[in-house]
Each structure stands twice: as C-alpha cells, then as structure tokens.
Image (cartoon, rainbow, N blue to C red; front, side):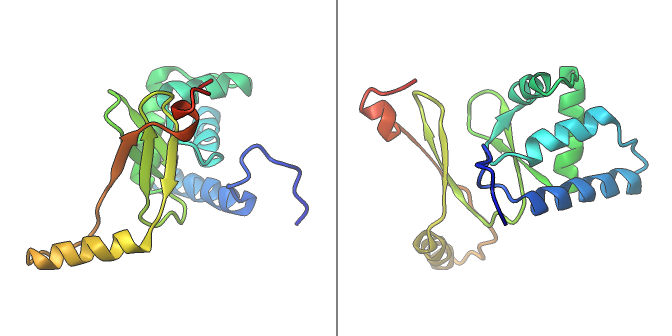
Length: 161
C-alpha cells in the first residue's frame, strides 16, 4: 500500500471507489441518469474529508475542468443525501455543508468562529454521558449532535491565514 502523499490522506481510495459505485447503483435503481456532472460532483464530495458548501463544490469542479451550475450541484447533493452516502450539516452559517457519510460513527464538531475551520472529534465519555442523561429523564436516546463554537488554536494565537 504505497501512498503518494495524497492531499486527502484521511480518505481511503477503496472506500471512495465503493461509494462511487454505490452512487451509480443508486442512480440506476432510481432511474436517474449517471451524468458526467453528477459523477463529478459525487467525486468531489466523496473524495474529501472536508465539510464542503455547494459553492465550494462548484469551485472545486472548475479546478478539475468540469462545470455544473449551482442548481445542478444542489440537485445532485439532494440525491447524494437521499442515497445515504452524504450527510448534510447545518452549522448555522446560513448555508449547508456536506460530507461523505462513509463509516463515520456519531461524531461531534468544533467550529472556529474566526476562520471557519471545522474539526471533528469522538469521545466515548460523551457517548456514555448522553445515554446517562437520557436515561435520567426517562428517555431512550437514539442519536445526538454537538457543535462547539469558539476559536481554534491558530486564530487564538493570531496566526489566521
């Protein structure tokens, strides 16, 4: 498994290929054409571990030589979310962000209010705590979401880009 210092080291090529293939199957099963635009949009979202906005996806497409109108990007994102391969996130910025759902168990987000950097984390203690809190209130927990807003270390030290 020789790596070439890929820019998105946290993504697994085999998992991305499997997701791309699952998306093609989803399109086929729902009688939706697997257009080059749809596949290019899927490649951008499924091929990164970042939380991208529709505008960032459109900009990323341009760098690969592909183009898609904003409406096409939004419609494709809707299909990707319905397929279960992509998760829609709302961090209260006035627009949605999208990330590949692949094997990401419940995870939380830290968001820098200055530079916008999103950091994901998991903590088993938090999982246990939310279950205990739910049980204390006679509630059966299914899932939860936690977003912590503040300043990342870089912005706190005045090193923002």
